[in-house]
Length: 60
Image 1 (cartoon, rainbow, N blue to C red):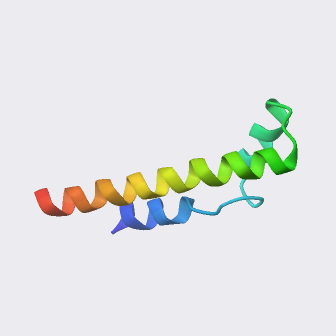
Image 2: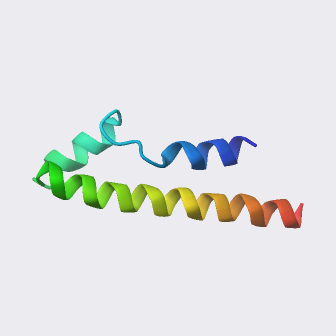
């Protein structure tokens, strides 16, 4: 259950996330570009995490 909650919490964690601003400033991206890339990356991480949890549910 902890893994499922952790995976779901990553989706849409935009401006409240310190990593968002750090990554934006480090790579000198505009806010628009950063929102586009961060949304896709976090959504992929959340979906892959959910898939991993479901796979572990089948195995265990």
